[in-house]
Image 1 (cartoon, rainbow, N blue to C red):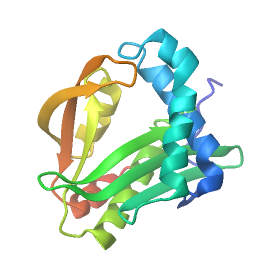
Image 2 (tube, helix red, strand yellow; image 1 turned 60 degrees about the vertical axis):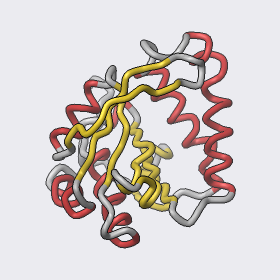
Image 3 (cartoon, one colour; image 1 turned 180 degrees about the horizontal axis):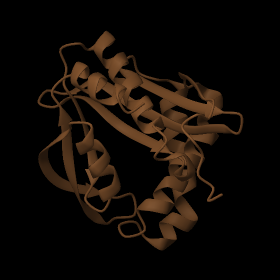
Length: 189
């Protein structure tokens, strides 16, 4: 066996709470370590990323704003994925999907689509007139392919000013509505 799990793995989807800070921060940091070594410094990834992510998630989960939604996907081993979005964040692009991370061994099992589908349902319920968007780094070609397969369209280009002082090209990918993302992701769950 290669360490991958099957789509049949039992999972629970729920709203995140403050007790999840360390698990979410650890997954977030590990994801950056695995995917962003080309844009984040080795020192940052080794010495600072975890503390930085703990600080971020402590702020977000200690006093969440009304427009924020954080969902976690867990199984018997703990949190295996999460998504964070901010409703109607941008006048042009709509609701921001700010984070989507799934443990590497669970990727390709439909869990990213499940998280996106659940986020789109939340956005539809609370911000039904809003489109959805996310920012994805140019080096993250796997994620770009995933979002494109779910109907997202590249709408803009820019640069991410990284926490370690670098700049990295990024794209804005958009869905015209929460309904469009719900329909596209439902088939992949």
